[in-house]
Image (cartoon, rainbow over all chains, first blue to last red; front, top):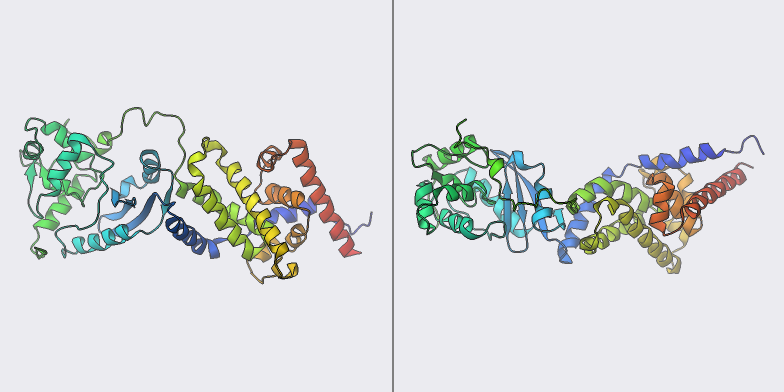
Length: 216
Length: 180
């Protein structure tokens, strides 16, 4: 054998150097192209986007029917897993018109330029009495509040205020379905999926004088 | 904290039994994030930088389409590589039929600076016979064991080992010839 012959281990090392191939320059372009094609071929069951807000990054998910879930910053870990478990494994980080609208409207809301959300919602993550409670809740006007008992009564079960509390605490679409507008009868603020402090901030945002009521 | 002030996470609406259930299929976004880059490198190793991008996209779209047929989340990596290996072969055959000279689309000739990291040797890999090319890519780019390579390529473990070995030996011969 010629002494200049490369030996096997040297070749293997050169081959293994291929693992260092930097694909980051094209990664974003490729994943966006995949998401776009997935949507075009109707393979995108759940589209997810992360949206920066004054509360921190919010997670937003939408099915073909509409926005299905809004998650607070502390829910980011496990957000995709929850969607895969409850809806479909075909979850991709991708835009979708309903998400774009929701993000735009959330920005306006946080700037006190919007008092009501107008985006299609997919209610599949809630059902039964909880769904009724959230229906009632979605009709509470900006800046107004109801008590758990009042919401339970409107949902048809005046004594089920505790169940109403659970429905609100498990609201898959907080902010968009304004469960922060439901308070304890005692006037205490009550628990909130995003934390009591977030609930307080949303209420004070809505109580502020900057908001111009809009729409009919 | 009072008893009324339960943390919200204890109240999350989750049908009982769902959480405790067996391993679930992960969200595809996570699969793409965890395995996508090494799959892309493998596709480039098999089809060159330009066609490699296409092979990668075809692989992910095929995987997404068939995703609900995947039963074992632990098998997702081997499953993805077997799709990529098939797509790379399709692409190779399509290129062989195409009027474009093979030299023009071979790895490393596109002037992509990223490929320099992979090194010249991958040009030689692109010229290996199909099975050896695949086995070498799976072994050295994807870092799969011989057992996993066998699963991906649908061969015995011994055949997988032989394909890797023969491929590497052939590369050495090519290099030896080049030196002489």
